Length: 202
Image (spheres, helix red, strand yellow):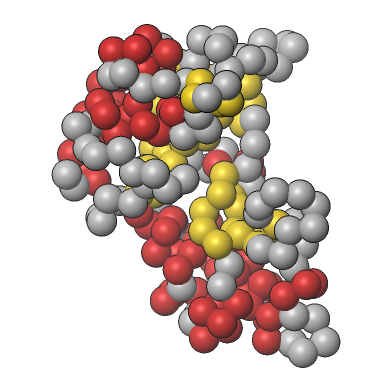
C-alpha cells in the first residue's frame, strides 16, 4: 500500500474511538498485565489490512507510521502530550552524511502521523484527531537542516562528541537519550512539539 492510499484510508477513521477499533480488530491494549505500548499503531495497521509490524515505528517501504498522543489541558485546549521519536542517531552515519542525504530527512519524508487524543489513563477513550503527511519546505526545511548540523558538528568536534548531545539542542529537532533509565547511552532525533504544530492544528 502506497503512502497516499494509506493516508486517504486512515482519514476515514478520523473521530473514531481507537478502543472500539481495537476490539473490532482483536488488538489487546493490555498484555500480560502490562500496557501494550504499540496498540494504537497496531489498530491502524490492522485497519489498513497490513501485517502488524513489531517495531515502534512501522516501516512500509514508501511510508512510515507514527503515532502521537494529544492531551486536554485544564482550560479545555488541546496540546501535544510528548515529543515524537524519529530515528536513532548513528554517529558514524551522521558524520558521513549531509542533511540532504541523511537518515533523518529520509524518515521525515516518509512519515504519516496519526494524532490521537488520550485521557489520564490508558483505558480512557482515545479518538483519532487527524492524519498528517509531513512536508518539509522553505524555512521549515532550513531550520531542521540547522538542527541536524548542530548535532553533526558536535559529533565531528573531538572536544564535544556523542556525549555532548543534549535535549537542549535544536529548535525543531532535538537529540535525546532513548532507552530505559537516565544512564542510557543511546540517542535519537526527536521532533519537538513546536515542529509538530507546523503540521497539526489542535
